[in-house]
Amino acid sequence: MLYSKKNYLLMGASLILILIGFILMSGGQSEDPTAFSPEIFSSRRIVVAPIICLSGFILMIYAILVKPTRAKKEGEAA
Image 1 (tube, rainbow, N blue to C red):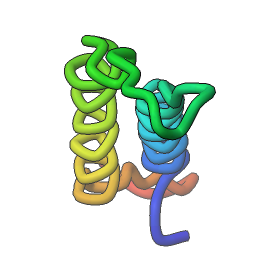
Image 2 (tube, rainbow, N blue to C red):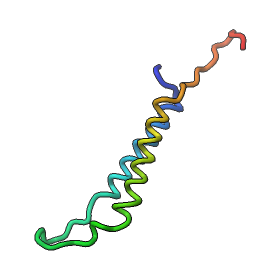
Image 3 (cartoon, one colour):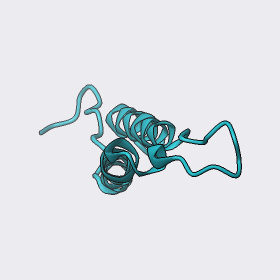
Image 4 (cartoon, rainbow, N blue to C red):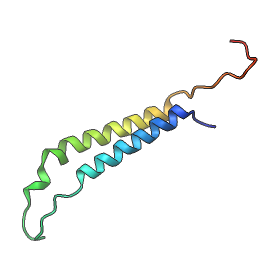
């Protein structure tokens, strides 16, 4: 395998963080498309969600670059 189980778990966790960030950014549309909705400027959408997405991307980079741990085979000397 190219990566170890730890790498794949970190990649999965980072993917979940990225998806959560994008979900937090969504929404905020008004019922009337011609009316202005101040909900699009909520701190959840412009501060919290991008921080969560950025942390997910950074974790993904770390998960890809971290050296995979190799299990020692039986009979190998340390």
